Image (cartoon, rainbow over all chains, first blue to last red; front, side, top):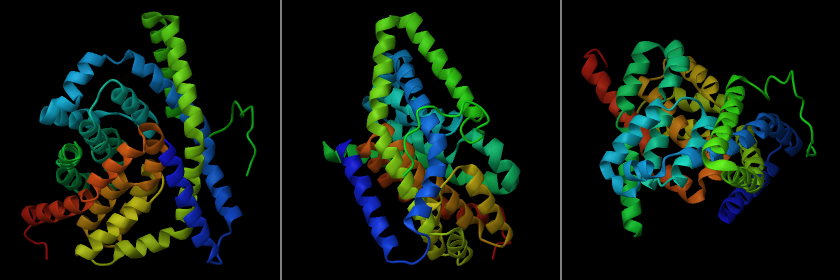
Length: 165
Length: 186
């Protein structure tokens, strides 16, 4: 957690210094824009966290650990792809569930797969936004091209995990 | 910076309470009740304390992440991104689309209209697919605001690292699919 604080502090400092070298919108204006985006999060993140920690208590640990744990291998990656694709809702719903699944024993590679599948396939988003905006042709081509991305991400994460141990 | 306010406006706050937030409040209450009934009061208290403790750790990260996002938006305006994406559809175009996608903040209501506008103004389909894929797997804003605080820096870094090649793969696959489906592609 410390490294997250440090990373963000460095990023923020760097951006602020870079901004300092340019004349355009000042820091105050940028902070005001940030505050507008912050407001809904002040409500959403606490709710999401508390819901996540309750859900973590309800998740069946043995089942999660055996079907999505580090030992679940390729089968776990395919299951995670399927789960990610049908996971409904935005980050406010997905990340607390992910937190609950990780604390119940889901492996890193499997969780990378799940988040990637949710990110690129997200069937609820396809139906709600993509089909109406982009039409069947473009959406269909995109989905076909993206089907294998989540398993690729999972396998790469597995390789990284294996290289580190 | 605006000070912490104790009480938030309970009603008439459209950006504060939307449909999915209300749904999630209900889900949190339901899950809490289920924990109370199935696991008892001790488990309920532990879960609540865990959640609140994590919240205290996370809030500074969220504030910093939102500010980083605000700076990035100020530095890379939408017009610049449209210029990046309107150009070539070769490898350079795909790489620019990857960069633009990862910097685009906001949810689907921000990204899809942009893609639609690009598509209509003649951007190549592989570029559009690469951009959308990058926005969804490499989006810096979402990674900083949600993933870093909830799932931790190590997980977030690993996921971003393995996701780096994905937008390019999707763009190249799209090119292949288009070639296969219609011989008229020039």
